[in-house]
Image 1 (cartoon, rainbow, N blue to C red):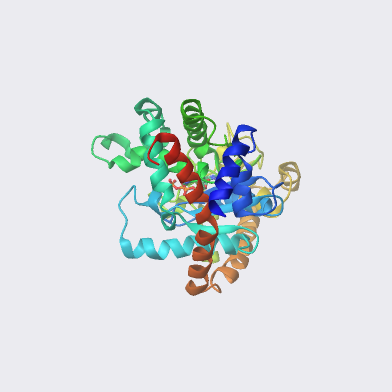
Image 2 (image 1 turned 90 degrees about the vertical axis):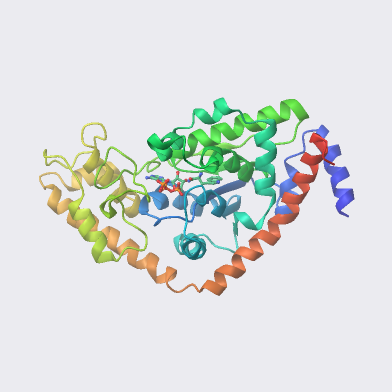
Amino acid sequence: MYINFRRYYLFCQSIDFYSYRAKIKIDMNKNKKIIFSGVQPSGNLHIGNYLGAISQWVKMQEDFTCIFCVVDYHAITVKQDPKILREKIIDIAKIYIASGIDPKKSIIFKQSDIKEHTELAWVLNCTSARMSDLNKMTQFKDKAGKNQENVGVGLFDYPVLMAADILLYDTDIVPVGDDQLQHVELTRTLARRFNDRFGQTFKIPEARLQKVGARIMGLDDPTKKMSKSAKSELNYIALTDDPAKAKKKIMKATTDSDGRVKYDPKNKPGISNLMTIYSLLENTEIGVIEERYIGKGYGDFKKDLAEVVAEYLTNFQKTYYNITNTEIEKILKKGAKKLQPTATDLMDLIKKKIGSL
Ligand code: ATP
Ligand code: LTN
């Protein structure tokens, strides 16, 4: 049955039917496009991650075949405590579900459960990725800082593993925050290079950004993105923050001294960022918010936003704290089982193309 499928695939490939491969294996609905995205199990997930990436995934579940990964091998590009990493893997999957990812509709799995991710990354390293590509990656420069000579090779090579994640499942769309655009662009380059050399193999994926919220800024420094590895806890609202603590963080958020609640990201980045958060969590247009606060100051605005954030967190945490670790373990295993045949199939094809099989 499997051999027959591969023959059929090789035949289809020549008439540009290759993208049905993953769909046939993963989901019988051949008309749905494939979505792939992931988050690292490190640090505390914050409302930037939710508003920039995960909330987009939730909306996509109805119309696409969605695959959401907990990218634990990406997390180990920087030092991790094994005990904490183990807990964080479960935690991220809980966060996916509490944010609205439905395991009955979407596939949720752990990256290291499918060995083909690292296997494909190695093949891409050797056949498609160049030092000059990776030297351009701004995230590496940000993360390595002045210490570039002494950081692990994995941190440098991280975007190639991300490309493997995406390409392994014939992904059509990659919903991410804007800091990941450069990595998706690289994925497209690597896929094209491999296809040019070995013949049509990979589908060329596209990134998808939120129209609003693709870059939520830090509360303590609205000129830089909100980040879970920020030095100060005042930078972000973690999804697991106690709502009372989150309220205090909003009240302390950096704003300018002008005092008008006006959306102007260039000149008023602090208040504009808070208005974006308000607008997305309350599903209200920025213009409506501006009108609502004419003649009022930042204090009134921040108090209201603090309530909106606290209400979101309270609802989120009700689900989050009710999911058990055993449930999550089952969901992750089931997800990997569902994806494994597609991953094996593509890797076999790649090995054949490069001469390993
Ligand atoms: P770090 O800053 O420590 O690298 P992170 O907060 O960027 O971590 P990731 O796991 O790298 O978290 O990102 C998960 C997803 O959330 C990605 O799609 C990323 O683009 C998105 N994302 C991260 N930070 C933001 C942000 N401030 N605004 C919007 N989207 C974001
Ligand atoms: N690099 C991403 C996480 C990530 C990812 C992926 C996102 C790893 N593999 C595949 C989308 C698709 C990050 O740091 N946010």
